[in-house]
Structure formats: structure tokens, C-alpha cells
View 1 (cartoon, rainbow, N blue to C red):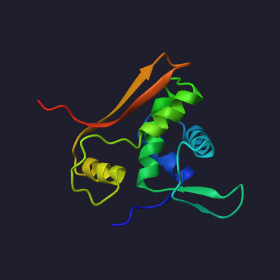
View 2 (view 1 turned 90 degrees about the vertical axis):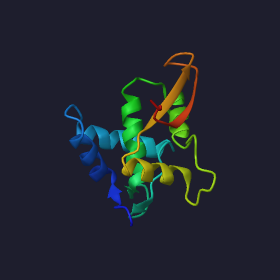
View 3 (view 1 turned 45 degrees about the horizontal axis):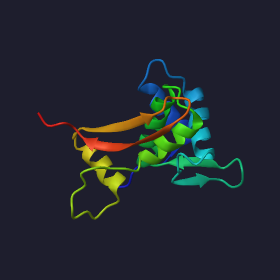
View 4 (view 1 turned 90 degrees about the horizontal axis):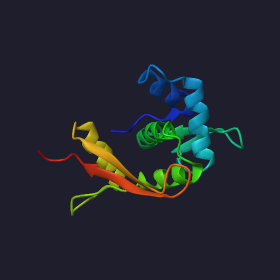
Length: 140
């Protein structure tokens, strides 16, 4: 099953529909900034040159949602870069894994299995460092 490919504008519209306080134009600018800073890797581009539209697959859409949410906490650009890198970390992977960890995680979430994104902030929101990644829902 192939996932739809969305432009940043289309992705922003989808994300804005999930949150009554979100503005699609603002989210689109924010997502474009994430792409420009290398925090979000597009699946490809439509067109050529500096104005080519970044295209997002389900991974890009999920990461855009996470990054726009994290940005609301007021993290410095340095900490946002660390948080973006932490999105690649998936704990408790099965030993025999035939797909890339984040794709496996997205399949798990699509099946209704709960996962959490755990981000450890050391030193405050303006300076310091972060570490973290996705962890399974607590048992109990």
C-alpha cells in the first residue's frame, strides 16, 4: 500500500484540521522552515530550483505533526534540531525487523497500538540538550 504524497500546503491543511487553534498558512511556513533547516526530510520535490514544492509522505506528515507540536513549547532552534533527530529513535524494536524502524512504528500506530514520544530536556528550553525517542505505551 503506497502512502499519499502531499505538498507542504496540503499537509498543513490536514494538520490544521486536527487542531481548532491552528492556522494552515502558519503551519505551512513552519513546516517549510523545518525542511530548510534539515529537521524534516521531504520524500521528494515537485518542480525544480529554490521554489520547488517539498513533498511529504506519511513519515514526513507524522514528523511535521510532532515538530509543530514541539515548537509550541518554545524550544530553541538548537533543541528543536535535537528533538528532530530524536524522532528517528524507536525503542523496543523486534529482533527480526524487515522494515526501517520509523516505518515499522507508523505501521504499529496505524494498527491502533499506542506509542509515546519521550523527550528528555537537560538544561532548560533556551539552552542545553535533548535526547529521547519513541517508547511503547506503559503496560498496566
